[in-house]
Amino acid sequence: MPNSPRLAVLGSGRRAAACEAYPRQTELVGHVLDSQNWRDDDFVGFRCEQSFPLWRIGYCMQFDFAPR
Image (cartoon, rainbow, N blue to C red; front, side, top):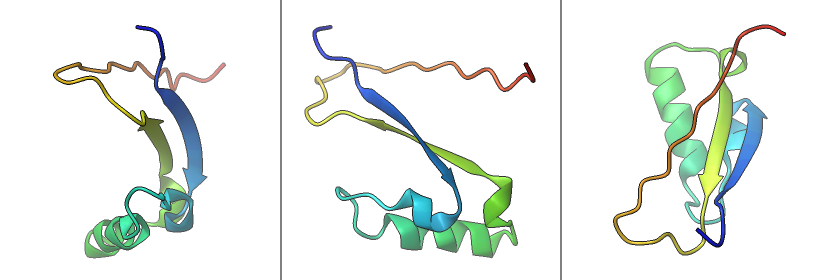
């Protein structure tokens, strides 16, 4: 594909989840965390962002969280 989607590490905390495309993203993340009594610092967010995704394309990512 000519343009790969951008993958960004957002960091921990609900404020890091803010997104221009979805103004209420921070509120949604906060609701999920609060409803499960989860701490913000226990999670790290990632965002795969593509301005104009191709129709019926799947983007696959693999994460390795093993210690170095």
